[in-house]
Image (tube, rainbow, N blue to C red; front, top):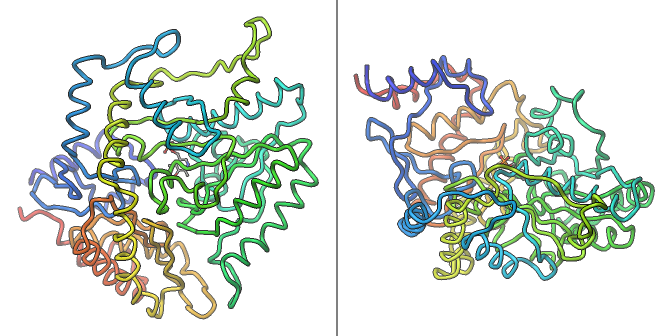
Length: 467
Ligand SMILES: *Cc1c(COP(=O)(O)O)cnc(C)c1O
C-alpha cells in the first residue's frame, strides 16, 4: 500500500469531513497533505497541488509563510492563551487598534470570536440586543438577500438562503425576511450592472418601508455572494442600502468574512461603496489562513447602548473559550504587516488584470454563460445553453469533473456546482495564473462535453500513486 493510500484508509476509518457526502470517497480519493510551501500543497507521494482557492479562501500569503511563522513561533514562547474576560494581552490590543485604524471611519470597537459563523451570531445578537436596550423590543427580525451565505450555525443558516445548506434544517430556523439579491448574472440583456442593481433595490426599499418597525438589521455579503456561486453586484446597491437603513432606523451588517482583506480589490468591500456598516464581520483571511479567529467591529454609539450599571442587565454576555487567542492574534498582526510592508493592495492590481486577460477567451466557450470578476475573485459559469443561460442539472455534477481533472494536473480548484472559480493567494505569479486558467479551461471543455458519471473518469488514474 502506498503512503498516500495508507493515510487515506486511516482517514476514512475515523473521520467525517466537512461539507461532504462521505460515500463519494468510495470513488474519489481524499488527498492527504504532507506539507505546504508558498502556493503549493504536497502529498505523501511528492505530488504538488497549486492552491488556486487559498485553501477555502483563507490563505492569502501562501503556506508556511516565513514572516507569519516567525511571529507565531515568538508568541508561543511568550503566551499561548489566556481568558479574555477580565484579562487582556499585547497582541490582541495591537490587533484591535490596527483593525480600527484600517477599517472605515466609525468602526471603533472589536468583539472577537473564533470562526465566521460565530461572528455572524454575534452581529445578529448584538443588533437585536441593541434595540432591546433602546427600549425597542419589537425590532427582532432580520432582512437578508436571496442566495446569501453566512455560515452553518443555526442563526447564521436562518439568514442564509443557499438551499443546499439550509433546506434540510428549515424546521430549526427563524423566519428571516428574504429580499431578491441584486445578483447581476440574472440581469437582462443590454442592462448594465449598475442599472440592474438599482432596479432590484426597489424591492428592498419597499420591504424596509413595510417592515422597518420590526426589523433589527439587514445583513448582506457586500459585492460578492461567494458560497452562493460567486454571484456579484454593483456597489451602488450598498450605497442605497446604507441610506435606506439610516432613513428607516434599521442597522446594517456587512459579512466580509470571505471578501475582506483585499479579495475584492480594496482592503474591504465596503470601501467601494464609501459607506460604513454598523457591524463589520471579518474572519477567514484575517490570520493569513493560519488560525481560527473572527472579529465583529462596531461603533462606539452601539457600544454605549450596552454600557451601564451591571444591575441594568444591558451587558452583552456572549463569549467563546478561545476568544482573542494570542497565537491567532500574532498571525493576524503578521498578516496586517505584510499588507503594509509589501503594498499588497496596490500590487494586486497587476494580478487582477492578469486574471482578467487570461480568462477572457473562456467567454467564447459555447458552454460558458458568464465570466465575471471582482478583484481577486474570478468565476466562470458553466451552462447547458449559452443563449438562455439554462444551467446544467446539478445532479450531473459537472463541477466535480473539473475538480478531478484539475487535481490530475496538480491544481486545487473546488467548483461550486456549475461555477468554476479562482480565489488564489496574493503571492500567485502571472505564469501560475496562466497555468490554472489553462487547466480550468481544459477541465471545463471535458466537463461540458460529457455528463458521464464522475466515477467514470480516466484522469483519476493520474493521482493514484504508482504502487
Ligand atoms: C465562510 C463564511 C462564513 C462562515 O465562516 P466559518 O468560519 O466557516 O464559520 C460566513 N460568511 C461568509 C460570507 C463566509 O464565506
